[in-house]
Length: 120
Image (cartoon, rainbow, N blue to C red; front, side, top):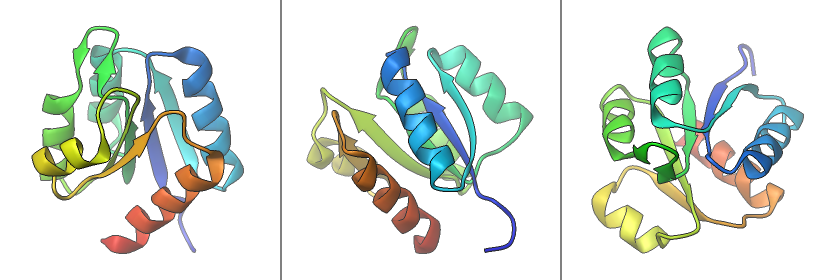
């Protein structure tokens, strides 16, 4: 596999965020996060661009769409992780992104990351 893929996790429910990070790290990815608000996620993103981002749609300080749009424009694979939006709603707005509905089993998270990693 060569170099480890970097995965950024933005999630405002910290227990969920840490679970996600553990799941991603155990699968052998390099994890950044969890970031519970948009400003910290954006800062981390500007410092080091990830390969993949798992984004909760609503963070502590706002909706994640502007960050997602920037990431997609810069070829970062985006996976939305939301309890509020359905994958269909996400697909309408972001046809290139994937979506997971909370709560999501770890195996499905890893499967989605692998699909995102090989899709591009």
